[in-house]
Image (cartoon, rainbow over all chains, first blue to last red; front, side, top):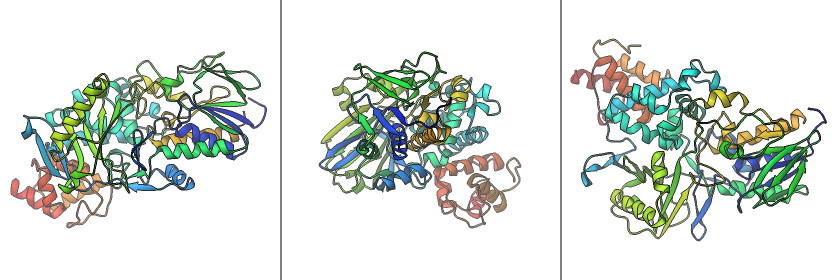
Length: 455
Length: 80
C-alpha cells in the first residue's frame, strides 16, 4: 500500500488493547475515534464498587514484575499497584465425604500425592520447553500437538488419580479452560507465553503478585479520558460496529446505530470470536477464529463481607475445590477498606453449568460453598456474579481458547494486517497471551505497524 | 546428573535435581530450596525426580521439614 503515514484511525473496542493503541496513535498526532459497543470502557476489565470508594475487579486483575509494559503504563497514568494478600493457611475440598473432605494446610500445597503432581508438572514443563513461543505453529511436532486436546493428552500421560483430579483444576485456574477445549499446543504455548508454569502459577514473585490499586478498569478509564481530551480524539460509547469497509483511500466503519466513520486505517481490538462477526468486505480476510476456537470459560464471583474474617482464623482465603461452583477462592479485599472480599473462580465446564442457573440459585450455591470452606463467615453483605462466558461483547474470558487445528491455521496470520485493518487484542500477542500485558503489547505493536509501516 | 540410576542417595545427586528444576547452579549441600526461589509447585518436581532416581516416595511435608540436598538425602537413605 502507498499513500504515506496514516493521519486518522478508527479503533474498534475500548478495552486495554484498543485504548493503548488509540492513545499511542493520538499521542503521535493521529486523529483517533474509538468505538465501543458497551456503555462503558474497559473490555474484559471491569470494576465493581463494593463499599464507598472500595473497588474490586470483576474481570482481569493480576500482574507481576515481568509485566513491564503494564507497569510502565500504570506509572504513566498516575496509578499504583497493591500486593495480593496471601498469608496463612489454605483450604482444600478435593474429594471424600462431607466435612471430612475439607482440609486445612499451610501454604498452597494441596493434600494430594506430591510425586504424582510432580510428574504432572514434569510433563507440562517438558511440553512448555519445546514450544516456540513467538510462533507456536512452527514448534517441532506442531501438527501432532495441535491435533490432540489437553483432555486426550491427560488420558494418555496422567496415570495417578491425583494427577487426573488436579490437572483440570490447574488448567481452569491458569487459562479458564476445560481440558477438552484446548489443543496441547495451545496449552503449552499459553503456559510458556505467560512466563512458564511456575511464574504463571505464583502469587508472590509471579503473575498474581499485585493488582492495580482501585481496580484494573482505571487503566482504561484514564486512557479513554486522555484520548477523549485530545483535540482530534474521541471515545464513543454505545457504538457497536457492524462492518469495516475499505477502499483505495481509506476505511469506512459502520455501526449498528447507522453511523459511518471514515479514516485512513482501522484497528480491530476485539477478541477473535467477536472480530469474526464483523463484515470486513469486500475481500474476505483470514479468519480470526477457527472452527474449534472456544470462549474462555470464566465466571467470577465476588462475595463481600464486613471484614476479611478468615484472616483472624489464620486462613488466607485461598481454597481449591474439586466440586463447584467455586473451584478456587482468593482473598481480593480492596486495600484501604475494611471490607473483606472473597473472590471465587468458576472455570472450565463448571462455568457453563453455573452460568445457566438463575440468580437466586447462583447466590445460594456460592454462599453455601463459601460457608463450608470458611465456617466463620456470616451471610455476605454483597454478592456479585460476572458471567464472562455469555458476555456478548467479550464472548469469554480470560481469553479465546484455541482448540485443535487453530494454531496451525490462525497462527501465520495472527498479526498480519488485512489491508488497512490492523488487529490488536491480547489474543494477537504471543507474549503474555491472554493477560493484560499481552493486550497492552498488542496495542503498542499496532501503533508501530501503522506509524512506521505507512498505510 | 543422576536422574535414572538407583545408587544410594547422595547429597550431590539431590543437589543436581535442585539445579535442574530451579535452573540455577548456585546449590550447595545446605541450600534451602525455598530460599533459592523454589515453591511448592517446583518442589513436587524434586519429589518426582527423587522417586525416579531412588525409588523413594517422599511427601510434601517431608520436603518442607528438610528442604536441602543434605536433608533430603538423609530422608531418602532412612526411607530406603
